[in-house]
Length: 278
Image (cartoon, rainbow, N blue to C red; front, side, top):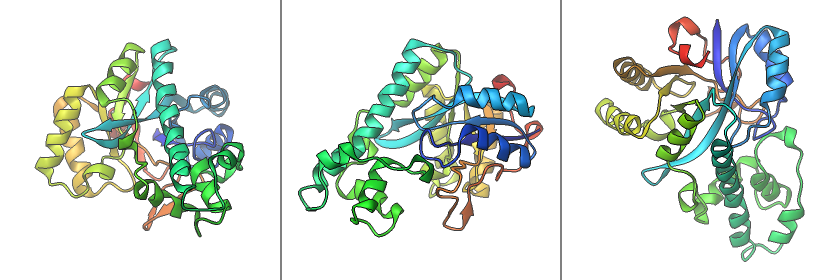
């Protein structure tokens, strides 16, 4: 069965509903999927219901913002059970994620007359447009010309993830394991695209020591070297080997010539190592 274990809906920064995700997955002949919204768990009940009707296996998932060596890493948690500590962990990450935009507006309002924190707090946007509140607000208030232009301002105003109290990799792994789940490093290319094979292996070894259970070896932007290195590492260490498109619907569907649509990674479950998730 074809697999896509990294999909977003409008519950975080995607443009599609869980039902629409299932419909798209059906068109692409996917047999196993997971919705992994950023730091929210709201999509799963609808996904489970719609996937069952469509004859698709749905794995419970979430993408958790975390910090490793002073930088952002995304961790995909799968197959976790209801657990109070896990829910608190996800809520903590969500609170910090929202706070990045609040702090950005707080700092920017000194430089721009047409924005304010009070205005931002009362501002609402159409969730089906994808993205998140901060970049939509700046775009709608004419601070940025394009929606994606707002992203660079987080760095300019020192509001990047590393400035906030996101959970550590070890904390995410420990609590996810407590909830009976598994943790997979998402899109390793986002962090190590400029590293040699030896350097990538070194980082993966450290992350394994902190508790990760696998790596998203197949991903639209992974280079051939990245994929081969991650697969080799996972095979040698008996770790999960997953595949994900990072599909957000129409939001960011193409970036730097790379397509991120549901089913973009044409991988069968037999080519992966995901038995523990089923």
